[in-house]
Image 1 (tube, rainbow, N blue to C red):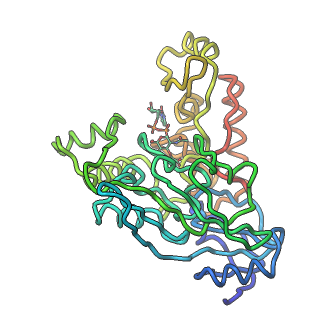
Image 2: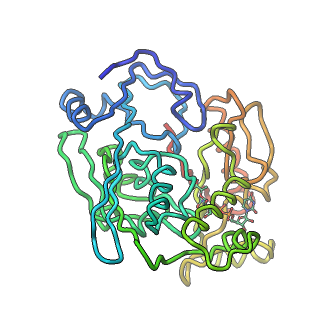
Image 3: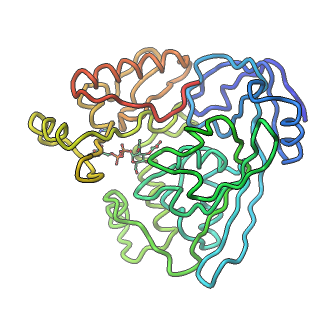
Length: 337
Ligand code: EPU
């Protein structure tokens, strides 16, 4: 394993923020991972996967481990289902495409999400009515402090909306090395109820969609709305969609009758943060190289050389305005480092 000194992380985070890692190593096998964990403790390591859900605001003065352990295996499960395991360093979208190529159903709505397989469970990635937790069977993870491998069943991960045990009580304590999904081999249950998917299929006159049709529809929608990180630095949704009380929502509705919403239960309603941000006039605005995407106000962007601090200052400005106008506290979805 080669350790590089003073390495720029600009190419390793989708926001394209230029911070420096004092030491940097690529981990391509489990034995390399086990070896390094036997030598370093938690405080001496910074784990980097696809770098697609983080905002780097400072240099990293410990060893950065870039996790690139690859490999996909399939095991028979039942007449209708298959177990598919992917190592953490597999690119998420390539893995979804592998499943579609083999006609394994369940992940197609999660097409084109940036990042690697190993970080997908941390925030329970989700899009267009589907979340990772819907098909995840288990994940394997190395405990950084002991170097021991643990298996987390779906329920052990305590998944929630963009949330899991790995963002809470076990934050920073594990490296997810492998994720196993139970996927359908036939009679796929398609999830096309999300309005945008129905419209994208109708536009192509598709009435009896396959999982590939759904994947392609999702790809078209994402490309039309979300900036491609290889062109404009970003981390997808910067904030979570806030959940507010029904009473609070009713008050807001009096002033803003067109406010969109999703009912969670009889006391709670989710409101799209993108709508709130647009109402405050931020959509498409730019301060230096830090900005709010012109087609999706929930996405903050780095046009070229913004620092993490400039993006963070913009995020704080947005949070302050939203709180002042709507009395809602926006929580960040990306991890601020
Ligand atoms: N909206 C606006 N203005 C905007 C953006 C959105 O008014 O600038 C309104 C839309 O008109 C719509 C509503 O907000 O009424 C919801 O918009 P959209 O369907 O685009 O979804 P979202 O709530 O903004 C969430 C996820 C996305 C995911 C999409 C589709 C979160 C934080 N974000 O966005 O996830 O792709 O739904 O399922 O839950 C991500 O996590 O990085 C991400 C992109």
